[in-house]
Length: 295
Image (tube, rainbow, N blue to C red):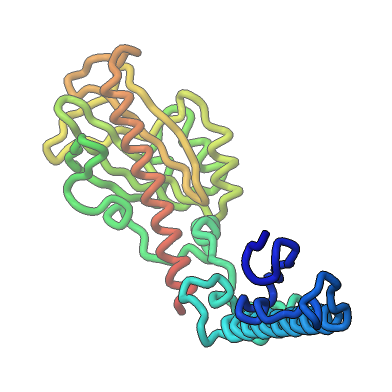
């Protein structure tokens, strides 16, 4: 029985073209005995072709890998680098500061410390600016918060005891008071006199303040449209010191009424004028300190 050329026992070789397989001899004489020499030659030829195919495929793979590596090197070199690559944001080694770089140095400043205003109002030797009731209490009125106080009469004397009463004259004389200035302010039916006693040193002023008591009062100053007040009725008085100055307030009603603890407006008036006096003395020190620093 025949199945085409080669018969039923013929073998198909996938590595050999069909046209060549049809011509492969099985024997030299057409008998049933195969031609072993021819078969060996054919097998050797097929093996040689397979080796050539494997070698060619390996060479192509090597070329493909080399090409991929070359492309990767070109990309890493930057010629084909994407714009959003994070490495493009890094500085070069020359741009990165060394950890051992020296810290910046600055020349020491030679500006002197600010002058203390209190130094200038603590001694007559340094407190040399012009001084009068007008320099301490300028203008015709003053405003504290929302309250406006109208300025009344002023007075100035170097005989301190003449402007004081009860226990205050003795205290002023004992500590060598050199000057006592007074000024009166009014608000409705309330009047307050501020007295500023001047000493040569802050130590003298502090000692005088320590020797005062509740009866150490400056004389209320009336006139110039201000009715008499605190010349008999109970009034509220205060005493404080700052630098070489001791300042007093005496506040009451112009109608002769006694001041009680419920009369908070009188207390507020005395406190406002005491605060204003302190600020004015401090400003005096500031002005002299500023002038000394700029000169």
